[in-house]
Amino acid sequence: MTTAKQVDADSRATIKGIICNILEIDPDEMTDTSRFKEDHAADSMGAIEILSQLERAFGIDIDQAELARMVNLEGVATVVGEAMTAKASQ
Amino acid sequence: MSELVLSAWSVVSPYGVGSDPFSEGIGAGRSAVDALDREAWPGPFDRCGLVPDFTAAKYVGKKGTRTMDRVTAIAVTAVGRLLASCGDELTARPEQVGLVLGTGSGSVQSIMDFTRDSLAGERPYHVDPACFPNTVMNRAAGQSAIWHGIKGPNTTVAGGWLTGLLALSYAVRLHRGGHCARVLCGAAEEYSTQRAWLEWHGRGADEQSTPLGEGGAVFLMETAADAHAAGRAPLARILATRFGAYAERADAQQALADCVRSAVRRAGVAPEDIRLVAPLGADGKLGALEESGITDALGAAKPEWIRCRPLLGDTSAASTSLQLAAVLATAGESGLGPGEAALVTGIDRDGTVGCAVLGGADPS
Image 1 (tube, helix red, strand yellow):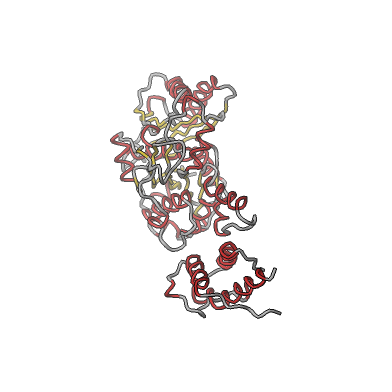
Image 2: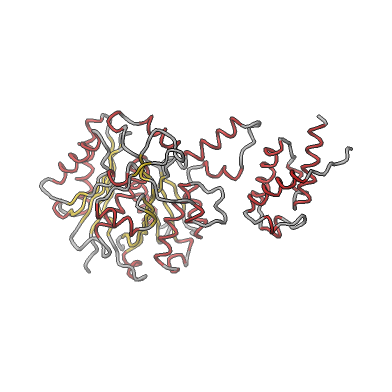
């Protein structure tokens, strides 16, 4: 088991931009822990969009099972960090 | 059984959003076809009847429209304006309001963009999933209903240039079958570089240079009794629709003449009662055959001709709906007068002909 690398600040900003665009909210409205579904009215389609666009933006693969952890910015950053680590070790 | 009437309408056209600019433009016979911004709209045409400054964000709203394509936004806008002009009572029982919307192929831009992303991307599934719903033909009809809370039967009709007439005919049958109390029916078409190339390659040499146009028109169809109960004066009664087919292009004139004669007979009006005629008016041979067919059927009658094609461009699937709107615009706010009738016709290059006969409001 490798330790998950936190994503750098640039990647984090990219992630936030993608999510805010999909959820149609202002970046100021989103904190690291505000929840997409409960706080920002995301639906299941929005979750799939977020996953898909992150895969394209970072060239990574994210299993759909990870959606359970991708409930806020912090969770997404962790999942993306792990996927980038997995990709680098291939 | 109470007759079906058209009692309200709304338009999004190259004249702008709304029925006022459309009525003014049609009435003045002013062309809305203008030079295209070639940077924004590359492709085979340098002129087009574009809805001016139209975007989903501007006319539908900023929220929820990020992935809404142009034809969907045109339809949602047209339906929204129609509902707004009728008041809340119309959708008080939303499951009793049907929606029949005509389309060409849905949005060919959405279909092609999505397919290209899948083929050209690093992985075939590296597509924007939110754009997938735009690739189905009934996206515009579905979104128009969802956006405005309409819950009755939702139908998409596609039939080339005759689409608007086919949608009208379908809406009549839907109502007659008892599936809903009221029907919103019409058609919408968007301009895109993708549609422009398809049209360019699909056309004959005699119509190659006709500019394209875009827009949409939606009509409220209900019984005369329901219209009166809601305080709406019927604008026109729907007396008959007819469709036919031809195998050889030279037979199109006869096919349309037969179609019009049959519809006029069914409508129970005399040819000289027909005050307004709105033909499709394709460039080249088909347009000439259409006018001759109408003249053959109406004989010595001298109606006023409303020719939309030179004013709006070729609006494809929206053509016959916009012709119908032009008839209502010309008839004016009180609609066709008692004893007056109107005829809307079309000949499609794929071998179909069709028409609708409308009548003035019953004086009783």
